[in-house]
Image (tube, rainbow over all chains, first blue to last red; front, side):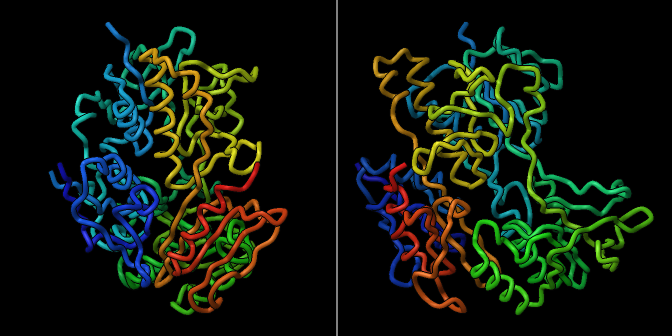
Length: 64
Length: 403
């Protein structure tokens, strides 16, 4: 089982709060811009949901 | 029938508490009572991105999850009182809500300027969606805007109003904007950048009266000067919404005092078994810093404290064997905040105001930069303009400071 993750990059302001909740999925690159893995194992769901909660712009979604 | 968990306050903290109860395995009924007519929504964009564009509930509403679809939302309704002995909450429509546990999430409301002419129209605050809708309509190009208060909210609104083409003057008592948490050097730089964008500051200044017949047309400063204005915005901090708890046994000396499990503490110093407080209204000691209980008005605190309550309360209500262990777990959330003002992307972790020493640790003050905040040589906070990855790199160090 995998989950699909989508970040609305028009909304994302690269605050990076998600990085601490789901470090396997989200990171800020050298230009301080968000990079993320769009597909992950089901075991990451709880972390990604926590990242969704802390996103200041509410820009992160799990596509079920 | 099982009595519900009653959450008073239907904003982010209330929503996150309901979600956390479900996530930690509580399946019983939940009622959430909130005085605003809107389902829970995200406040930070209301002074920034959303205020600069179109303000609507749709633009800021939190998504509702299947696990909390059966929460009974009682909106547009204010809690009037709580009877902690008989475990009931009475609301403004006369309904009495029995509870098995009570979660206090009533948050804050903006302080308002107290002057002789205070009943004039045209005064704005920045807290709720309805505040933002009213303010957005007033921020037309060329409008003369006076903002009282130069904290984060005042500065964000100043930047947004300026970008919308308004003439903006900020009036505040401090030497520089946001100086109390950030320190003089960074605060002075932020003021300089605002001034470079055309924002005017009247620092070390108070407003002694409002001028106008029906609506505010100007403000009177303590220097005797009058400033004409079309829009008057008050961003002078907040008061806690705890009046409905007055007369109870709770310690309400500044918000609701709680222990490390977010259980409300009574005036006799004992913790309630079935009353909790979360978010802006909760005052608790964070073992990451020292033993002093503080309210922390940062955006991550409602979510972090709600999760802690969800964990503790679900274990208790489910009579989980590990409940004592859950209660004893150390809860030490890292305060986290950000602010966008013009091209400045400010990101910070920790409690900056605790510092006795502030120093530039990366970058240049007039470009991207990071400041470290130290108390007795230990890092208690970090704040940057830009350089987010560098700022993030210090977060764990703050968390490892011995208390």
